[in-house]
Structure formats: C-alpha cells, structure tokens
Length: 454
Image (tube, rainbow, N blue to C red):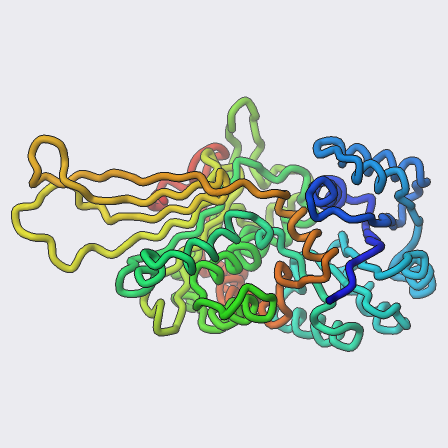
C-alpha cells in the first residue's frame, strides 16, 4: 500500500488560487471521514510570518470548520523563499517531515522553472509533485515538461491537477454509464445524434486578466476541463476504476478525437461587451483592467469534435464555454437520434429526446415521448428527473484526498495532457490567424444573436 502524504508544501501560498480554491478544498478534505493529520507549509516570495499565514489559512478554512482543520491551521508554517533558487528550494523541501507533496499553485512559466530546478536536486524518496493546469502551452512544451518530470519522479508521483475530475457529478458518469444496462447500449452511433458539453458562467473576468487574457476560453476550459469530461462521457468501459484502467480508457478515446475540420469552420468565438448581470454592471471585456484589447482573446468559444472509433463515428461532440453569460449552465446534453420509423397516424412532439446530466446542480433528466392526454394518437413529451448524490467533499477536496492518499486516479496522465493540446491545436491556429471572426455579445446575454441556442 502506498504511504500517505505527511507534509503538504504549497508553492505560491500567497496567491489567489491558494486562498480561493486550494485551502477551502483542503478544509473540505479535513472535515471528511478521510481526514488524517497533516503538516501544512506555505512558501512564497512575499514577506509573511507564521502568524499571518495561519490567519490566512484559518480564514480560508472558516466556511468548513472542523477540529482537524483547526489543528492543521494552528500548526501551519510559512517560509519566505524564491522557489526558483536551487538552495532555497532544497531547504524548503527538507523542512517537511515524512512523505512530502509539493503543490505548484504557481503561474505556468514559474512552475516550469521550478521543475527544471528540481531536476538538479536530490529529492526525498516518494515526493509527489502536484501541478495545476495549464500543463505546458502546447503539445511540444507539454511533452518536454513530461520528459523532465520523468527524470525526477515516476509517473504515479506526478499529479496533474484538474479539479473537474473531482466533481461528484462527473464521477457519477461512471456509475450512470456502466452500471445501467438501459443506457450503455444506447450511448453510441447511430442512436445518438449529438453530444453537447456546456459550461456557461455568469462570472466575468474577476481580476484574472494576467492569466485569462493570454489563455482565452479554449485554453482555460475546453483544452483541459471539457475534453476530460468528454473522455469520461465517451470512453469504453474500463476493466476497473483503478488509476491505470480508468486513465487508460480516457487516453484511448482522446487519441481518437479530432476537430471536425481543420480550417476553423468547426469553431466559433466571441467576447463580451458592456452589459448587466443581475445587479452588476460590467464593462466590455476589452476595457477590463489588464486586458490587451488587440490580443483578441475570446471569452466564449464553441468547438465541434469527432471521435474516430466504432462507437462514435459520425457523432458530433460540441464543447462550449463562456464567461459573463446570462444563464449559468454546467450540462452534458445527449440528443438521441429520431426513431427509424414512426407509425403513420401518430402526430405531435417531433423534437428528439435528450438525456441531460447537470454537473451543478447535480441532476439527471431523461425525455420520454408518450401518448398525450385526450387524443391517444397525439404524442407528448414528459421528463423523468432525479437528483444525483451530494459529494462528501468539494471538487478540490476530492483531488486533495486523492493526492494525500497517493492515488493518481483523479490526476491527468502525461500522455492525456499532450493529447488535449494536440486536439485543440488547429482551433488555436485558426483563431491566431483570424480564420474565425471574433464576434461580440452583451454581458448578461446568452451569446451572439446569430448563434443557435443551446
């Protein structure tokens, strides 16, 4: 059995990611039945003493308070260090006890520098490296980073974090698909007309221009999160849910994935203009602080992919994500093909049936076509709905639990990270060379008026 993590060292402890997502996720883990004693060390360039760091940890833990979280916060330690300096990084790692995990809550460029420094050090046995997305900036850089990591630690000691894999509803896909005989035979061509993965946010830039303006919707959401969810939606049944089998099945379907065309016609992009969402008045994206309006960064993107295998040949997979939209949605929508023959004399509902899996809120709905009231030959639509089980932890809590337990099942395997960059490369090139027009939509709307509703 793999030894669990004893010390968690957060590189970039003073950053937004740490306070907004990582520490609350840790609190969620510590409040769960899987909690265990843990030493927490924060490291950053900024000046901070132990008391200030403990106060920051406590504030992030407040929403999910527990005795275990209080104990971790009270014993937390802070080290002011430049983690790109070999000697300072070596001393920081040496300050940990037992098995150590390094969590890279750092910008991608800094994270790559730290990895290069780690390659020059003698590291403690069993050290785990947890890296946030984006993993590299393209397929080549992701491959190069993987090659360096291979010289430092074995693959099972690298956690490429994508918190979408920790969302309980995403993991519910496994039970829904593979434990229900009614669904699994149907989820294939020619029974399915199309599959849509939609992640629309009411949130706008929220002060993240430094990262987002260089990434955009495709890199921020589609290249990582949504392609991984698509892989879970479309993969063949794995032999088990072990990390080796599950991640192998995901890699297999991603290797078969390509954009529907390579000239940009498979994609649409847009960015928001000034508008209102609820009681918030938002400026145009181009006028947000830190944005370079000439860069042409998209805040909404929709890309159609195909999977070249027996199960899914010819079925379009439409992945869409955007910011500052009127309706927040996190849905997987499977639209079934029409029946091959409808007996003459039956009239009424002609819209195709859909299976909708909502990630947030966690619900499932299935359309059925039934005889309507009154005239039995007039068809009507009804819907079966259920609520999926609540998660014991937040998405980041699930990822941290997997990290602490030494089980990489919720981490992204190296070849999968490379495949995700390969898949979106034609789209990014089409955007860069302006083969796809940059349209606009008012903040608070559902996207450009010329786009089909989804």
